Image (cartoon, rainbow, N blue to C red; front, side, top):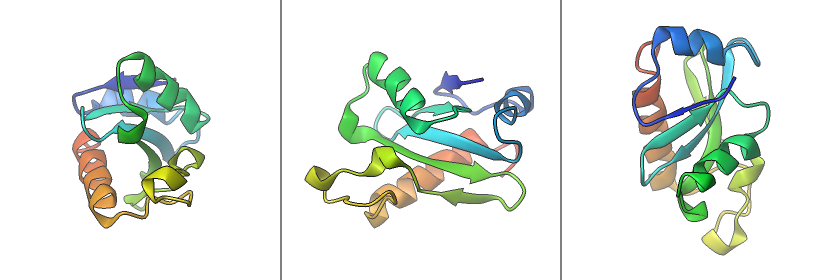
Length: 112
């Protein structure tokens, strides 16, 4: 189940998001609009939702959160953007990484 919203996820919603991979939830965040799409099988699904809602490609980044270890990761194929100096699956820009992590902690504040 994919849930896209601008407010933190409730515990009930987090339980639904866990249906795909259990303790790991894939996330795609528009770091400018501060909207998160989570719970998808593939990051491009969340990216597509955000683009349809008016997000700009350059503001959308992918990663995930491990609910057991409380670790936020920054790894997704949608992050490969040589034109934005990001030739890797990982978010390389320290400022974008920090913003992505802060937003992830905001959206999952019920458990992180």
